[in-house]
Amino acid sequence: AAMKYNDHSRDMILGFKHADQTHNALAFVPWLKKAGAEMLSEADAIIPVPLHRLRLLKRRYNQASIMAHYLGRECNIPVLHQALLRTRSTQTQGHLNFEQRRKNVKSAFAVNDKYKSRIEGKTLILIDDVYTTGSTVKECTKALRKAGAKSVHILTLARVVRYED
Image 1 (cartoon, rainbow, N blue to C red):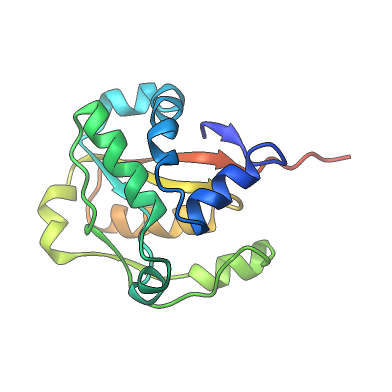
Image 2 (image 1 turned 90 degrees about the vertical axis):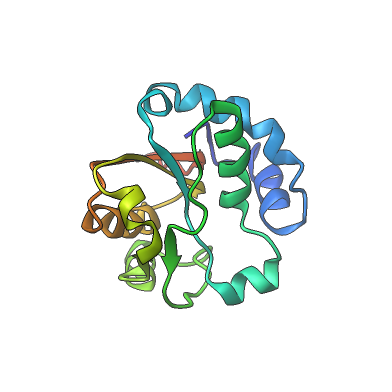
């Protein structure tokens, strides 16, 4: 992850995600490049975590896809925007606990058959905005590995860090 998800980053990320501040993606690219430098140097392709088509219609854009687009362009790595599909609508996860998140996204992703040849044997970067429990990226990774991906690395803009007392 390029940064911690906390009081300092929350407004910027939520503005990008829900308030049409898509121009922020350009500012995120240098941070993503730095955080993911080693994995990006080995990547065959970048794949954004997909939104379900109903959520995409409501939001009008996929924030992970926008970040992937600019990062791919900057790093000269192909971006496979339609390679991974969200096969069913899931509820938003903002207020779900770990177990609820896991159940919510279980088996919710599949590889688009048109992209299987571009995934098989490849090293992929899965990109998302926020890593909270890892449930979403784990399910995406399962689908990509099932389709024959050699390896899947996770690169996120922010990560929730929990501290034990």
